[in-house]
Length: 108
Image 1 (cartoon, rainbow, N blue to C red):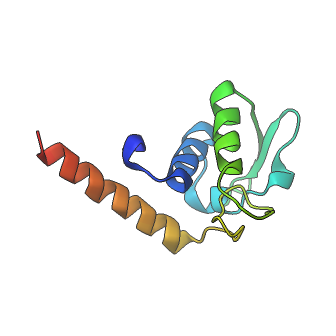
Image 2 (cartoon, rainbow, N blue to C red; image 1 turned 135 degrees about the vertical axis):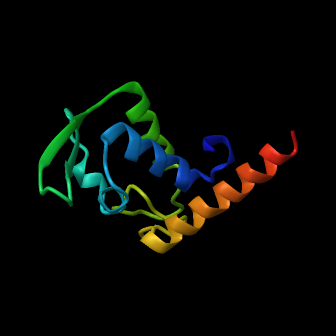
């Protein structure tokens, strides 16, 4: 699935997995939430505030997010114009990945 995804979806997948965060939590993530120790996340479901410690893979996901924007932005998940990615857009990207993966799987 990861190989079929666009860059925004790859970043979202990595952040969700590595930070054990929900979609809404990563969509709200801003670069101001990145600290020396790790990424500060408030879990929307529980309200729990956590720092997810840096790992090489987590740093790679953030570095990949930085390649997305042509303009300055505050949001880790953003479009090339710097605007925040919205829930519906991420859902559409994910559906496209699933369809793409389904087509590849049926080729075998």
